[in-house]
Image (cartoon, rainbow, N blue to C red; front, side, top):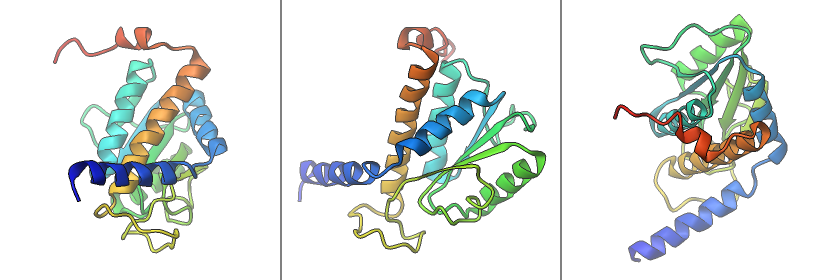
Length: 186
């Protein structure tokens, strides 16, 4: 196989996977973000990188947004949302943060493969991405040609980009307006 053939396989997998995402769950997630005073995002590893990119876009849209674990991140309150991206939904540090935020009364939103995971137990909004992963013992009817959690991580990023478009539609924000908040110290 060559690079183009691999890319074609990856795109087919992505199309199949994101084609099963529930639109109602995505709308509920967007609405939770709109209702929040502050949005906190969290994830670990490559999922964490996708969540950080989403936090950047939220900031570009004018939302008060923070990445959990960064030095400038304030405390979470009962007026806020904690959005977690985790394929397994059981990463220890994320479970601890979800439970802590839940005890405070924050709204927990989760994007995951496993809607029965420990984080899902405290989440008010769950958006499921049906991507096969060795971390989640769930038969989804096919196996990815990609290693580890790549298909979930890629699908997470695409899903977050679609949520940006939902938020832009709901708020009337434009690309031009978002560019006015683009970093000018780089």
